[in-house]
Image (cartoon, rainbow, N blue to C red; front, top):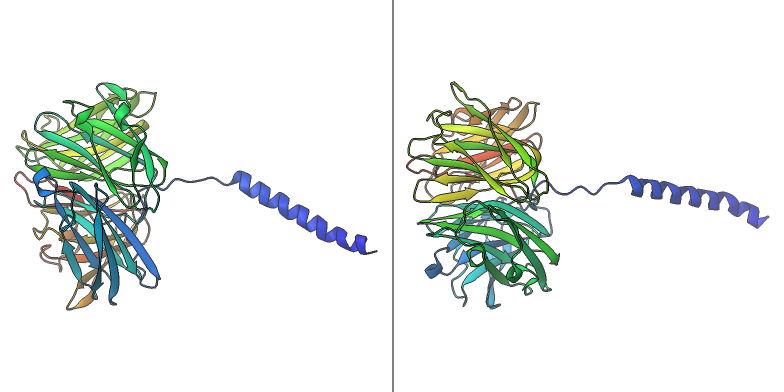
Length: 452
């Protein structure tokens, strides 16, 4: 009798196991569309962390600063770990007040050549951004290490230096391989294979040691053990830029602010990490002009360049928006500059929330909002200030697949100098792109702090 009572329970358990098995077999692992997010404006979190890399000693020319921003109305304790490529460093504790900012030089008081920073925060809503010493580039700090990193456009020609700055945020050593794609094809330099970086330590890879006198170099870092925070440093003449890279090749990307100014150079640089040729189409949108699509092919395991400026088919008429479509996944980067130097910036993934801040103190020349979806979105904008707290500037609506300048969308904002704002969209289809004041215009492209 008791055995008969157990039959239904056994049947239920068997059915449950079948259902679980079916769900497991049909579930798909979806890779994140971007590098890990740190812009989690949730003050209720018990603790958060983020990591920054891409700093050198002053004599090496790639020094910079980290700026911490508290986006909440509560103070937070932050433990800052300073590390170097020599594995030495120190920790200090900071109390960051409501809506307060704090900037520091990661190399101060640390012996070494290259430096990284880890920050442990009690609570949420504190984010970090890194700025080069000469205020020619910005990059967001990220919330966790990654296992794959791709970037394009590096240059090791005479007068240029390309460095991969690598920080291990974990308590165990990490091991990684570096491969490249260029006019030489696929190259995996032996000295860049099985490269190890210690726990909570910093390392650097000088691409020019093995990839000599080449431009438009694509890179893939594959982490074999552990996770890493990686930023590419491109030094070209007097200009230093951060190439934050992406976590995988893509068949589409948008560059919302590409200069067409006289005297400027603007290129979209591509690397193809796969065995099949990639056929790329670039849709160039320029106010008051109709521009024919630009096309090019990228050979397997190689690189190619599309020149936007100077280009006889594209008028010199301010900023253009460039949308890329490719038949095969590729790595892309925007290269801007003059005949004497270039600066690199990676394409961004659409997000729901951004922190827009004048962290260089120079203000912005261009600032645009782009809706990458076909459906309209609403956008709430809140201004942050230590004395005034958080002030709502208003709500705006952005039609599908359109770009609008921040100044025209928010006429009450006035100047963009010294401003810090949270820009929050109704869906994760927003891009925020900015340029710093330069001559010619558009030489320095930065993104809103998209929370990586």
